[in-house]
Image 1 (cartoon, helix red, strand yellow):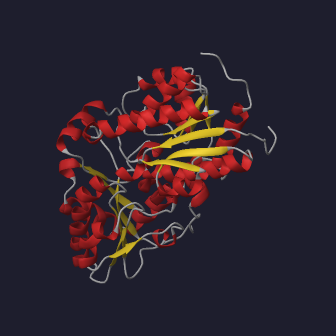
Image 2 (spheres, rainbow, N blue to C red):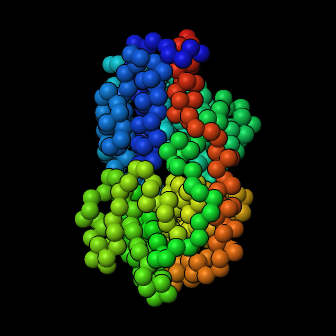
Image 3 (spheres, rainbow, N blue to C red):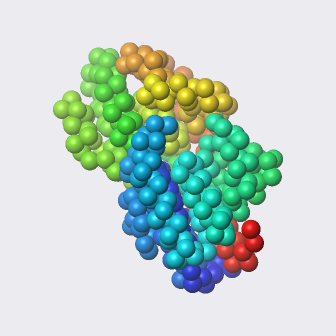
Length: 379
């Protein structure tokens, strides 16, 4: 494929969560670099708002997770789906690109299929964790799947879905840390309660109590809460009252200096791993959502770090096990055992080569542009 291809058309990108918004914004810029003249319309969040030619809706900042929150928002989602169908009818985009967020994106994909618009998926929904039958549905709706974990490529190709592993976008944004890092003095603890309001409300009080227990053993320790881009400072008032710093950063400078992270399960755990930051992973859901998730989940671990390693590298505390005492106990077992701490850091950094080389968004954009210049297939 030529390095740059002239395309005078529209492309629609739909992301529904904060990490998809961030990675989608990088993809938008890579698409526009690969295809001057290509115009991008986006559903996403603050990052995609700044990158796209036309921003249609801030979906990611609504923070809908689990099973019940989307149900309560059915009217809103139905209205957004109608608007996207109207956009596709009026603009006839050359491509639809969906980013994760299967529940809503599967409906958008069906609309695109009916209108004969080629569709691509960048960053697969976690079909390998729950409801693998979705792979068969995706096979009928998309032209190509562009995945960010190597095991996903094998899974889709085995099912007959056109697929390419393009690498993980975090490799492009996370600095490679120094190999050696001993627990510092004062101890630096980072709290990452999640990017959605519901996660923050469940996790932040728990994390703050756990940090308070750790302070009994490390009186001079410094505690920082890493705040979400889409959530205002008022949601972190409890942390400020207890003297914790509330940080928002895009360069990972402060995160890379942490000795330990207490982290909500999600993208943050992989970020920590690539920075070599040992962690305790916590996740709590509403009880109805937890009951459903427990029945559906088919993997042994919830933290991507442990899934990639194929074993429990970092401790996971889920639902009723996620108490301040348990979190503090797991953290202390790492901090007070220097050999175990150093070994865990080495194991975390060993995951980086598994995730490909820099240039993920550019590789994904190149594949999509290459596909876009091909004739559309008839339904």
